[in-house]
Image (cartoon, rainbow, N blue to C red; front, side, top):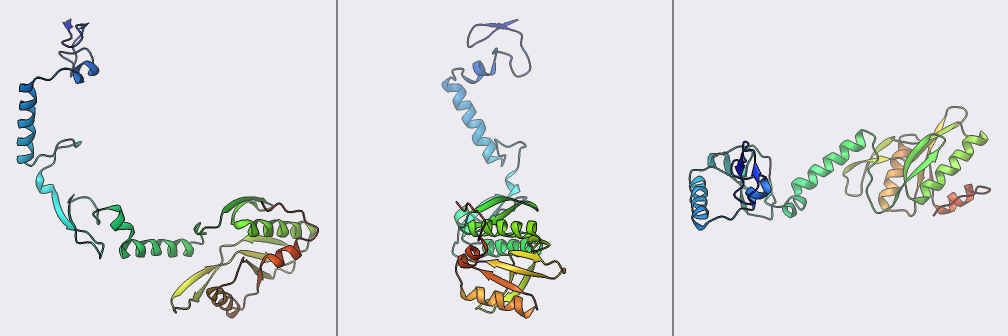
Length: 240
């Protein structure tokens, strides 16, 4: 048994706790001026020798390299471990760079190609319980259309419907290629189908999207609030 140098309590020594009964006593012990000077010299020598402390493993200075920030508006040079993939000196440079924007654009395009809806924009998203299960739609207009289509399906007016992943390629005003994901796909009893696009307002790019769909030989209906109200006749809808 030994006596703790901090609190005076008797304890059984163990690895790492030879002179103190606990980590709390060991870490809160009073450090003399001589001890602090010795520790400071040891730390300084370690930096001079190229050893980096406070790492899981000791690393030499040659493990580091200098890189130039990839942001075209930044000329900062920063140090980084060679095995790391860091390309920018800070988050602001990363998010404002053309590299990040292109990477984000590629990710969005890939998501569209895989048929996934991109949950962006300012319109709120809703989980709606339908005859086809719980689906995630954007905005109260689409919630109301789900209820209309479910009513049509129950009454036998249509065979089925889905919140579709179908897409059509189109050219924007600047003549760049983009993918347009349609909203709803409806099957008639004779197995023919058509699409419904739900909109709050119309833009120039919307006209190009709709024209591209029609050029593919596909039938498309555009529903604004007026069309939604007409088809809601006799249907109680809570759009809050």
